[in-house]
Structure formats: C-alpha cells, structure tokens
Length: 318
Length: 322
Image (cartoon, rainbow over the protein chains, first blue to last red):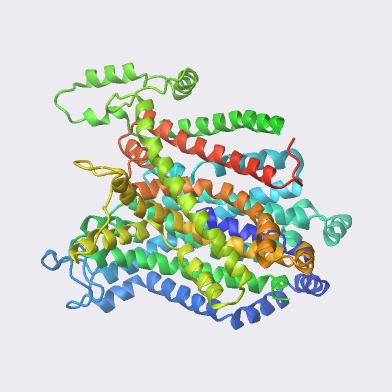
C-alpha cells in the first residue's frame, strides 16, 4: 500500500524547487486569477498523452459501471443478492449470465457492479480521509518545523516501520467494520506517505519570496497556508490520489480476502474473491473475474496517475 | 562506523518499545477473549471460564499486563499460546525460518533479475527491449498479489495436472507424507516466491532504469568513455556502482511491503510462516501468539531498514556515518 506513494515521492517530491522562470511566472499569474492557466495547460498536455487518456476513459467507465450498479442489475435482469441454486457455477456466457454465476447461482456481472461500488467507495473514502490527515500533519510539520516537526515525523517513521497489513488486520478485528469503518481503518495507516510528501513540498515553499511578501503584508499563518501554499500543493495531491487508489483498492481486497474486510452480504471485489477461492477447482472464471476487475482498475489509475504527473510537472516535458 | 551502528541499534530500542505498546494496546482493546471458544461448551461452567481468565491474567488492566509481558520478554519468556498452550517461542521457531526462506528467496529473485534488466533497458533506451520492459513492469506493478497467487495456483497447480503436464504443488512448505527432499521444497517455494517477488521486481526495474539514465548523463561517465574504456567497464565500474546507491534505500523502504506481502502470500499458499501465524492467531483471539508474531514482523522490518542504511554508508563514501 505504501509502494505507490514512494514512487510519487521520488519523482515529484521537489519539482517546484527547480522550476524554470517561465513556469514560475505561470504559477504566479495562475494564483492571482484563481489558477485557470496552469490547469488548462496541464489538461492540454494530458490530452496529448494517449495512454493516460485511454486510462482516464477506463476509469470513468469503471466508475459509471460501479456507481450505476442498480442500472446494471436492471439490464442483466438479476439481483446481486438472490440467485438460483440450480444454476450455480455456470461458465461465462451461459443463459442470461454474461459472466457466469457464483456458488449460490447469483449473476457475477451484477455482483461485480455492486462489489465495485463498495470497493471504489472504500478506496476513495480512505484516500480522502488519508489526505485530510496526512495533508494536515505534513503541512503543520513542514510549516512550523522544529520540535513539532520532529515529533510528528518520528511518529510517521514508527507507523511506517510496522508492516501495514498486520495493523490493518488488528484494527479490523477491533472494529468489525462496515464499508465506512473499513475505509477509516485503511486511511489510519495510509496517511503517512502523503504526510511526508506534503511536508517536503511545504518546506520548500515556505521560504519563497511571495510567502515572505504575504507575511510582511500581515497575513496570518492560516491565510498563508490555505491561500498561498495549498494551491501550490494541489497538483501533488491530485497525482497522489490517482496513484494511491490502486494500493487502497488492493488493500481492501486483501483484507476482505483474508476475512477481515466488509461482511459477506454486501459484495465487494475482495470478498467476491474470498468466496470464489473455495471453488477454484470447479470454476476458474469465478476467481478470475473479480480479481481482473481489481487489476484493471488498479492499472488504469496507476497509468492515469503517471500521465497526470507528467502533465502537471512541466519540468519533465522540457 | 561502529559508533554509528551502535547508535542506530540503541535507537531501535525506543522504536520497538513504541511499536510494542501500540500493538499491545490495540490487541487488548479487541472485543473477544481467548475464553470465547468455551462459551457454548457444556464442559465449562461460567465459573470455569472465570478461573481460566484469572489464571491467564486477563482480569488485570491491560497496561499492567503490558508491563508484565514486557518484563517477561526481557527474560526471554514470550508466554504460552492462549489457545493450545504451546510455548509462543516454539511457534515462532517453527514459522520464522519459513518466512525468511520465502521473503529471502523473493528478494534475491527480484534483485537478480531487476538489476540486469534495469541496466539493459537504460543502456538500450527506447529499444524494443526497453519498451516491452516498461510495459511489463507497469503491468506487474499494479497486480493484486492475492489474485496473482490464486491464478498461478489454478494454472500450474490444478490445470496443468488436468492437462497431464508436470504441475506444481498447490500449497504448504513441503510434502507431508513420503518423500520431502530438497527438490520437493524448491517446488513448493516457486509459486509463492514468484508471487511475492514479482511486484518488487517490477518496481525496482523501473527504478534502476531511471537512476541508470540519470547517472549515464553525468560528466564522469563521458570522461570514462572519452579516455577509451570499454563499454562494459564504464557500465559496471562507473555507472552501475552509482546507480546502485538509491536502490539500497529503496530496498530498505520496500521491506515493510515485503513482509506485509508475505502475510497475504503465505495465506494464499498455506505457507506455514509468521504471517499466516498472525492471521490464525488473530482469528482465534490468541493474543500472546498474535503479539509475538506481529512484533516479529515489525522487528524484521526495522532490522532490514538498519541494514539498508548501513549498506548505503558502506557503498557511498560521501555518506559519513557517525
């Protein structure tokens, strides 16, 4: 889970410290006019990146498929919770079951949509919570420095040193969580990566001339953080979210697979995999399909994240 | 160097204490108790359960128990399993070698392959080899290891057998009955080690490629080429040594993922290691075993990080450890 964030760290940890004159000026202009210029140009760069655009298309499709689960259910004509035991473990393409049926005779396609809804919701929610916590810790540590910085960062070091999955298992045992609880559990460990990134970024931003200028004019700390530093950390955050989602989806899947995730009646991709593993001899597609959904989603978000990083960091495009 | 090492080892103590405190607190806030297993048993009256709780010391507040646990650990006593009363130390001795074998093999596998592949794709930048490596490494980097493990198991363990091809065992560390020689253990190791190693392999390959590309552009490489050294000498003697440095840090940083991944891989392949021990003991509310197993994994990670830092200092004379 920490993997993805490390990759972000190595390549966009310090982009702005070495900005060219031109882009620095663009930032400046952008901020004054509440940033249309910078993001419009980033979008133009992103549109030229075929891999990123295809990934973006896939991401949008997956989100529509998952959050339109009731529509999928109407189209397939099957519900996610009721199945016909007489037609269990059917291969894909038999009868009206496009992707086959599971061990209880439920339509896998419909369950995939509902499962995706839970999996994606857990991943996004935990990304946002992790962002809120990590962003706050990181900017406080970076901005105030000194004692606060060392205390917070030693705490981060400590959490990073524990293999995340063991703490996740512990916390899910503790809470027996539903989807929201699970997202909080995953976020409670996922915030360390973004905290480090934001801290590094804030450290390099806080000594800029325009921050000094704001301080001279008499801006308060919170105004400087939110008005002057935050907009400059935003692109880092966008890239982080895109690259963190795969890890978070896989974390949900792994926890659910191990039996510590979302409880059974609500499908998620992870516990579909968990249910399927018992029947791996009888129907390999039953195992293959939910995992493939996780994989495609993770891959698409990773590729999109790489594209976003290139588009938002013009230094790399020179 | 010796002083640096000593200081780092001393610093490990508060770190491990902090971790153990957090983990112990969490474990003991978990609802459920080791005596739950007797809840519906007619052989145990509520009074019996109470007596067992008293004997196990479960009626003390958790922080008292933490300090008792801690002082026992310093005396080399990890306690007994709450569920089957075997010494925890024995359980660790049974599982730790398996975990080290699995993680060690996949680490070596990932390093041995990622270094040459990464170097070669940097040297042959934009070649067919480089492009396919890049695509493959992105593809493998995103793969969920739970799923990869299951699919490999189905393909090589089940389908190959159905098709009459030589197949691999579907789980465990060795064949329980009959022959269990060296080759048998290797066969059991292949799939889990591959599953665990492939993600690191993919990540490291990309990393080595980019750090090689950085190094190749630098002046001292041009100097080496200009004075007429052979390509191989420039690559291995000059470029590779410098590209290796950031890899050491990365390997250190990936260790938590490696041991975390081992938890999942061990479960998928019924590999009798510390990760599987953790999961089973958590399911059974077996606190003493869970505590020891989690601390073991954390300890391995911390020691691994230390080794990575020390290696970094040894390899890079610019880093002054002290």
